[in-house]
Length: 122
Image (cartoon, rainbow, N blue to C red):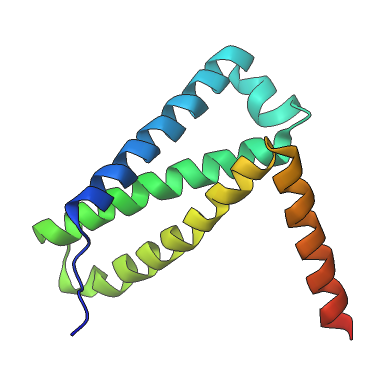
């Protein structure tokens, strides 16, 4: 008997974190300017990663609400499910965003990545 609904607390927390990440992204774009943020920044890969994470989170929440409200057509159900799966995969990327700020965690993650790379070759 597996529970298929997400508790309301988790939905509220997900929305709350999405808002925080979106506000942070907007503040950084305003502070640096769109050109520097998206084109000339030294942290360009991180900026794009942040942008993709925030946009995918927003899309996931919007499509989930549309799915719950029944606003999509039966033909788009498969597309909605695919989009939700991709957005859920992007949630994992939030951890990578935090990694760049915490030096010891970054060292640990890099160590794990290099170890896995070595294991893959053996």
